[in-house]
Length: 324
Image (cartoon, helix red, strand yellow):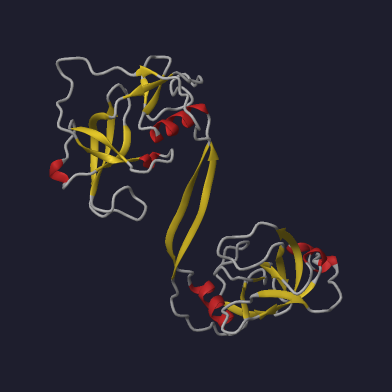
């Protein structure tokens, strides 16, 4: 069989985004609540060093540390790098410098942005101070950025010392939600491009390994077992068998599907690899292993909207047990 002609090279912008939620222990809670109150807290290690941002365990001894201290809101730049093209979500929209700042009273440096007119205005050793955000919620963004501060470094007199702090605040911050997002451009390659092109014609196409003769759907361009390239295209389905499934009870953002619903692995007839899809047209608690299903396409859809029961008798377990 002659291989199909090479498909158009496909690419698409994709976004992976989710909220990352975490609880805070007493040290991090005090640090973030302090920022909300325009105070910067660190911890004093067993060796007497003041660590800012604070950590819960001594980096040298690994012992738990909770000796909170308050440091200054001014400090000295220890090193820096210019950012000429800020990205979405960074502290400043205009070009700025990333700086490590050792706040007065601290022995370690804090990473943040410095608002400066250009790289010529930034230097190691320059004095800076915190510019607080107008609205503070108990997050690192409560420090809007650093800004130049006309003050000489401490040379002839000792720097200010960190002052002990109880870490107690009214209405302390107990947890944070940090949005995680990854923007990227995905190019599927030869085999998946053919698979996607066939789906646009309401066909499901896999590729057969020339050695073991297994048909992989979606195709990968190579057999994962034999390690050889696959080029022979094989149309499978459209009907298939539910091999395993799960009931989804949490509604996904921007997904117009009411919960609960069923997401299943489906072994299409003629395929040696199960793909996944949503099961519809049947109550969620009636979906079962061995259920025979077929795809349902919406007008203009580029892939099946869901799979529904065909009305056929359930498949015998031995016919799909190798595809679990």
